[in-house]
Image 1 (tube, one colour):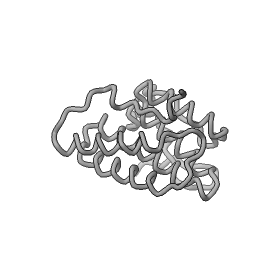
Image 2 (spheres, rainbow, N blue to C red; image 1 turned 30 degrees about the vertical axis):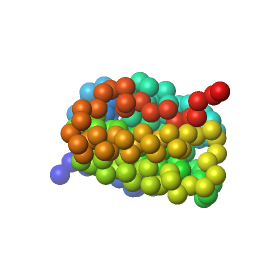
Image 3 (cartoon, rainbow, N blue to C red; image 1 turned 45 degrees about the vertical axis):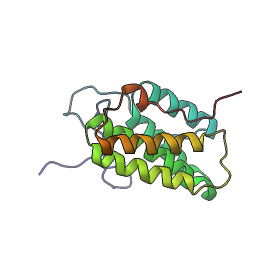
Length: 159
């Protein structure tokens, strides 16, 4: 059995390159740039970075950015960041063709975000909940999802 990649503490890790949908590539094959494990940004910078990745069709990478934000967020913000990361995971599942899994995760994301009281950082919670619910409903109904719908806006529009 091949030796697994391990981090400094000895925990299993996967240093293999990944494709644009986050799937591991064979050793030696060049993939998309990885999100650093120790990513540490401001909430605004996490949102900007994740939005750029979503706009570029890299929902898996956006999920990794939002997951880093979730892990470093204050306790009262973690459900919000987790919900945002789950939206990116749901989109990743759509991109990979796992439509049933995508609908489940998108509903879970909408529910997680809906639990949040005061939504900070200009995040468009209501718009994201509507977007995730609409995507899930369309997936359940067999409606083909246009690529543009896989690029949700994380922030409320400026007036």
